[in-house]
Amino acid sequence: MKYSSFSRLCIAALLSAGLLNSCSKKEVLADESSFGLIQDKILTTSCAVSGCHLSANDATFSQHGLILAKGKAYQNLFGVDPKNANAKQDGLKLVKAFNSLGSLLYHKLNYDDSHHAAKSYGIAMPLGKSPLTVGQVEFIRRWIEAGAPEKENVADAGLLDDKTPSVVTPFAALTPPAEGSGFQMRLEPFEVAPDFEREFFVRKPLGNTETVYINRIQLRMRPGSHHFILYGFRDQNNLAPLNTIRDLRNPDKTISLATALQMSNHVFNFGGSEANMDYTFPEGTAVELPANTTFDMNSHYFNKGISPLLGEIYVNLFSTKKENVVHALKVLDLGNKNLTILPKQKTIISKDFSFNKDVKIVMLFSHTHKMGEKFEILVKGGARNGEVVYTSTDWEHPAKINYSPYISLRKGEGLTSRITYNNQTDKTVNFGLTTEDEMGIIFGYYYEE
Image (cartoon, rainbow, N blue to C red; front, side, top):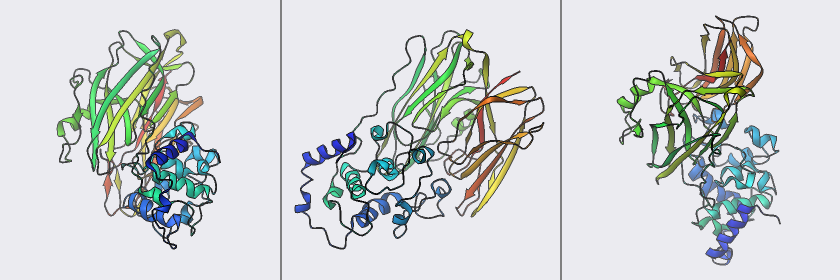
């Protein structure tokens, strides 16, 4: 049998712990099927919990569409196509019999991405909780490789008692750009308390002594991040102090008013929600940054576990020479704060935005929180009025679309955001800063003609 590098490390760890022979030390009851043990000891305790994969009433259900409650999990996993676009393109199933590397469940429960060539299959699970142990991951792998049966005993139950951490590959620093080709910024390791949603800002200098043109961005984050953004400022005379962490939430989970007020001075520049992101702007375009630029580095992590979570972020900004830039880009940051999303139903909210000059739209992407089921961007006005030019159904990893040809809009024309929110909670939800609130923002880049 052929094993991935991660699997070989798993087995080595298990051998050192003497667990491969544990079947002789622990009797497995005849009516305890391997999947029954997965359900009771992993899915029910870590996945099928309120707010995650318990029922269609979970706020996140519209995003993942997956219920893992007892009595439903097996039929929702076995042979089912994934919603994740990369996984679907690669031919994965949620669980594919006799093929753990072809099963998205195995990848999602495995924090070490070396087994799928660092492709983005979404955030590792369980979200905000401690990763599964080596034994738990190996138990699931063996069950899948044995055909993933619903009723049979096909894997050593002793593996489930293993306590060896499964994060075998340490978080690695992002290699900085070569000298003269860009800049690296970093948020050093920081702690996120148990059962806490931590978002903070720290203003840091980019380190450029002259105007630079950024045409590529790389991002690498430890697991558990909701997003990371580099913000610029509307008012350069009203800046936060350098190198000082400003938390949005106080230890008692209340909002820091001073930090919240400072957010009104922000202008989006770069960022994303993918743990490993690498985006290149269309050829001949770049974002112009003046000398001595500073950014408010914004990190947002949440920890649903019982132990502290470690966060850390690297971001690379690659630059190009001025003579290579045909069009210097401006940032689109078009948000709607007038949100009223009623409980137990879907709500569609639209918002129009107009330009006061002729523009070319180069790239678009969207941002909502977990109730954002579908985000559409339409052209407003002109010959293309009402045309849908952007659609994303993945709030965690929204599509980033480069346009060729660019979207041409005349003065007075614009864009419309049309967002379908699915609120399965009992409360009305409005615009807000936490993951329990909602947002609806068009991000992107354009230039003026």
